[in-house]
Length: 157
Image (cartoon, rainbow, N blue to C red; front, side, top):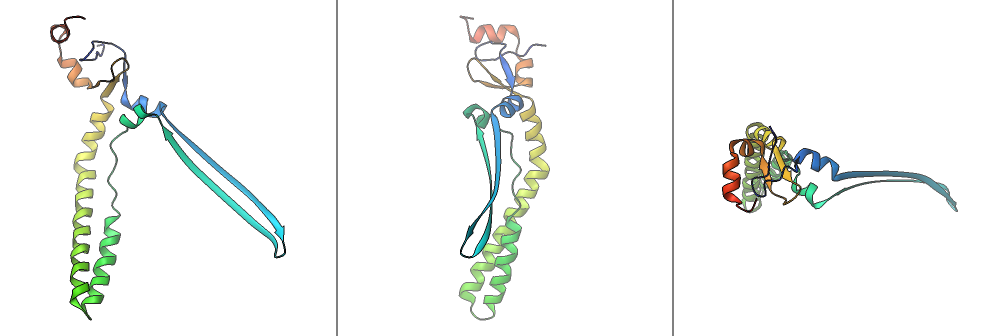
């Protein structure tokens, strides 16, 4: 089965995963040195990391896992809020409520990562981009279209 673009009928389609990997480059560097001065030898070290992507690679990026950092903020805010509640409720109650909101964000992120992310990753693995017109198409959409549908949409083809 050959995959075709539904917009321009081109067979020049590529997997989004391949386009993303090819268009993403990482650069890492490290340097170690030192200098002598009035205080003696002063060691120094530095490291760097940079990632660059083509625009098409950015558009073909996989769905990301949602961070679960909000639980840390929740714990801090709730603890601070409870501490403030002992002295003044004006600061304590908003902090506890903000902490509860962070707990809700954490629960939402875990639910997304558990329930929706696997399906989104499967869809991404089956998504292709046309090299001619830039249309994104999933393998299911393309296989469901018949040759007549493609000719009807684009009579000039």
